[in-house]
Image (cartoon, rainbow, N blue to C red):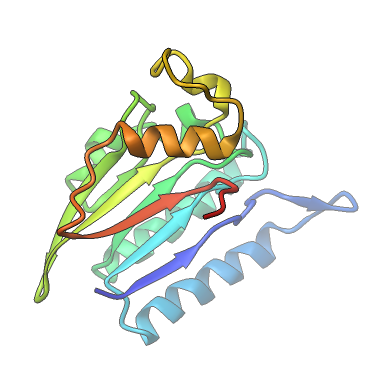
Amino acid sequence: MRFLHTADLHLGKLMNDLPLLSDQEAILQQIAQIACDEKADAVLIAGDVYQKASPQSEAMAAFDQFITRLKEMGLAVFVISGNHDSAQRISYFSSLLKSSGVYVSEAFDGRLQQVTLQDEHGELVVSLLPFLKPIQLRRFYPDEKIETYQDAVQAVLRHSPVDTAKRNVLVCHQFITG
């Protein structure tokens, strides 16, 4: 299984009050072309899709066109929210999109959202972990000491079923080590 990984698109960003969206659209076209040239099976978009939690409609339209192009190419697409995104806006229509092969991180419920894919080597599990602050996790794991982002990710992994006999990919937008 071949993945193309990207993150930090920051669609809608301004630089010195100048919009970058036309440049960003050109870059999205390049990403799609790279996915085609490299014969990717899926594209992983690991957060910060937009520059801000309330993106302008033009940025959302550019992302929609990008995802549509990837799907027209027959690729699976995995998207999670980052710290610049609104998790609720990113996850909008996530249940409906699953049936088309676009997997979007849903509202976090204490466990990893997992998607199982199949290829000639067997099963591969893609786990989606949207950006989470330590304070957001304390309600799910009240007995855990969660003070840092590292603590937060470790707690999620401890409380989520990960079958180490299978191939696993974790898509997240966090600063972690080890």
